[in-house]
Image (cartoon, rainbow, N blue to C red):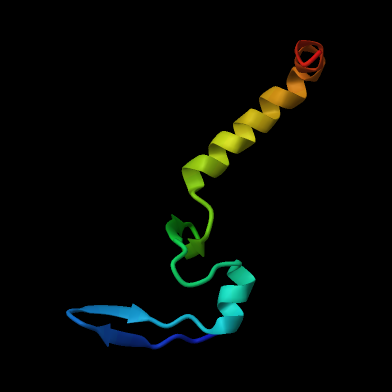
Length: 74
């Protein structure tokens, strides 16, 4: 478990993410993180939750219609 300290940044507050945590999230300076509220608390993720849900639906459609998509590609 990593403990982060809240720091003053101008008129706001923020936390500094250690290099190891950035590596585990696979993000770097300038990248975006999404804050998602879950039943277990707050989650930081580099993936847009809406986009991830759309991709899950697309994968389901592609799996169900694999034969049709294969014929259309020819």
